[in-house]
Length: 220
Image (cartoon, rainbow, N blue to C red; front, side, top):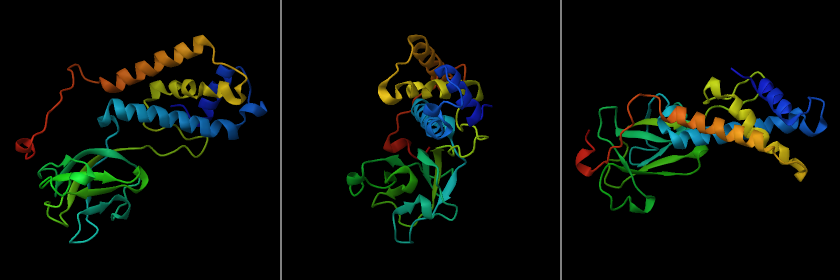
């Protein structure tokens, strides 16, 4: 596992510089490493939403008469939300919900939902015909915690691909507009990024299947 300090060392090696270079001091590289890790995790979430699935939680509505579920005000606040994987009534055996646009919720019938707000303060809104105040069972994908100390490692990225964070950070070559990333490093970055996304997207011998949901199939 590569810590943030290790990744910064790799970056400086790739840049051909050292820790005493004022252009690539810790205060410059720390946010760059985090931004690179965030970009990779974002790509992973798009490529395979199931890769970063969190333990399911039960959500309570804002009130007994409400169809709004605020993730931050739950008994155990959901602060790392990155998207819904599965939403059901009451528990994991409950009827499944289907996502709809917010403007469609009044006419959608029961068991539809929309997500509003940024990830850090997201709310789930259920359709008008869904019983208000009903507990919801949520399985969601999550954002890993940020790196705070040099001993922290990038979360959500397989250890064997931590070098991709260093390669992703090489946009630092362009700081000040005075340098360009060498073609060899650009190719290495692309190759390793593709390998990472192929790995997270294909972890079984059989291909993943896609299921088309209809109103009749939501009870499954």
